[in-house]
Image: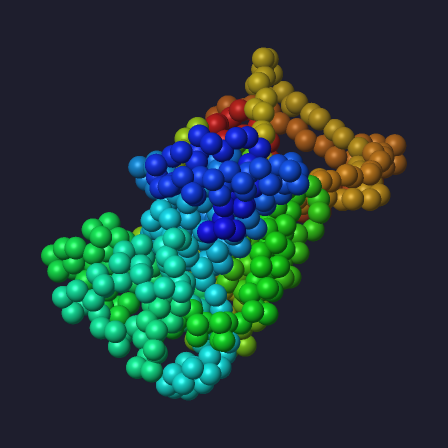
Length: 568
């Protein structure tokens, strides 16, 4: 509580008195005096001038936009929050006044009350994370041999699991007294045989204090497919709202939550002091800072169209790093699609493909590699639908969100991770489709004002090109990712321009005849030719395939306005 007040009020740049009087935040004048002293001390040492240092955070909503935080009374320190998209447009990430969120890396719908201290929460949440006002919640890693240290029975499967403990208390609970638990008198917990003393304390515990009460559940995490199950605390929210009454008449989910909590392995604060993995926690907090900086770098490079290399080494080494990196890419994709900057979103989707390839490299089991199927989404149908939309930006954003959900579905599956190689190609195809939109959207159709007579040839000739340096660097996707520059010279061959195109109109037949020829530069002798007849619009559909017959001539006809290119 004292640390939270120091961070909130000691770093305040304006008088906190109006905030301190807020009935949801403070209940007595003693607390007001304490927080006023924090404010005065913070100002005396100049902490308020560095308050923005505390806001070293990254919080985004489902649309890739920053989550608004009242920085005058809320501190988010070394934290990355990502909320999910809600179809009704409502906020799914809410943080109350005078709350401190530190060293957290969360992907979840979040509702945190006022005057809370939230520390070290990491990973995905299965359900909405709801923390009432005036609560402290902390997630701490346990040592690998914690069961042995505490005499807890175990099996072989459990020895390799990463285990964490949740500290969940009212911020005003006195841990060295037998008074309140979750802000409600202890005795309320023992009414109607909900809990017994033996459920919370060891038989030989002489003092029954919050300090040695086994109320902190231990959970295990086994990788990307596991997630924080916050339902274990649902009953506590109900318990404090009703001050411990009406417990037997509440809905089934509350009873299920209570039974889950009661049967879970739980430890006390006194036990935690011995089995907490402090070195892991220090490293985790340092990694939060590194991941935050890496995510900012990814966003800056992509959104600014910089040519810097984006290195995935270290960025996706574990679940938390992977979530942070993907959240940063999600923000870039949604923002760039909104702005119509398809070159930026193309590069971000290409990075998603690179991440799948990177993860697949760590897989050694090449057997039983199968594509992971999501019944309600076909990625190539989504690509085709995206390309067909002309001016419907909102629909394109929805399609992108579906693709990102599909990505998460793959990552969370229990299938062989070697399957990621297949899905890497899918997201590369999404990137190529977006690059194609960049090219086709920039085409300006030529308009002719005059027409030649039947049977008269119109001829155009051009010199040959000698490519000195940079050839093809001016073509997508290279030009969009790294820029492009080509040095070349135009030359004649034997005093003649060797490249020629000609066309004419004639009567007596329907359709269009396209013909390409290769001739000897000196004698004019025909070496090779290719012909294509165009009778219906569908015959133009392979204009974008370089290997198709007369593809370049088909492109020329479309540029000249023969038919709208977006309808081919």
